[in-house]
Length: 466
Figure 1 (cartoon, rainbow, N blue to C red):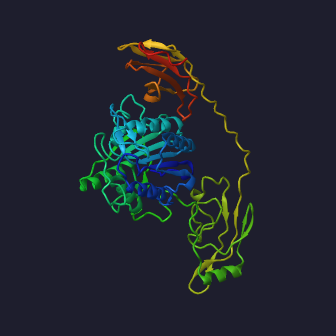
Figure 2 (figure 1 turned 180 degrees about the vertical axis):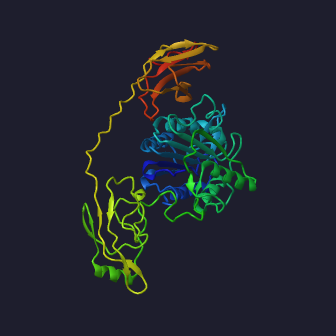
């Protein structure tokens, strides 16, 4: 398992603790503040500050979506969206996220989670997308979104993961006087302190099992999770309590081993001998090589050991060096005091000739899909069937079909389908006004520009495309 690549990942942390018409949640601000510190910690994710954005007390849904869009566009490895605040359900059971202007029992004053989901799906180019929701009814973000025939949070990526603080019909908890909300508090404690009995890395399921166990022990709501595609190769975080964890973090290996400091007696003896190493790139004065000493910048990731052998075994030649390493070891002799050392020797490395840079073949962008049917401004009546079709795009391995509906004011995402061919059918759901478009996708993650929108309506609505 590997951790996110910090310089290719980003996160948006959204926290709403004050509302116009709902109870305040003061612990939320501690959630986002401390999570940001942990995600920027070199022992966790090590995100640069400009790649870990906090939105505290937002009041405008558009500002949130714009921030998610910008952060998602920068991420090519891992993208995280975290929200903590009040959650509301509309009459159709859809989740809305509370913001500063949200009023109780009025989900239209909140941010629809569908917009968050659509923003991640459309703008993120990350290999792994993570959504963490700490709010009431947050499990409804999973219900129906990650099942068969649905795209989940994202498409054309290695994996997607959704973690919520409660089930779709259950409230989340923020115990009065606690520094954190219940769910986020346990998550923060795990990231900060680790688990002594765990391995060096926490998988996503490790985190979920820990949260489930700790919250159940306190009779608190149980978290929910959903996974799309394979995330087995990714770690959620390093285990800081693991005995083998290094201060710099277990997933960030050092390129060269640290050189040992020679004893003063040996340094004086070798200095007097005037050891010189001749390399192809110049002459570097050295002060002796003892067991487990590393030649800095020599292109080796292992020590060069002293000994009586005149040449190193052929099997020890590193794959990255094509020319043999010629070593004249000399003969053992008595050093200063009881320390055993060698006579001065010369180590030569012949580097291969520089190869001309190889040109990287250009990859042609995917063409924009051309829609075939249904035609624009078509009229449907339930129980009609909608038969979508479009022309194949050269180089595409699949297509993303997006559908949206409107009540006359705002367009809202309805569904997203991943289609391997160039057609798809579904029953007409009786929307007043409806539109659809298609995006081509490739196995290497490339996406085309979306097609134009095509519109449809039922027999009681007017055409909306004109």
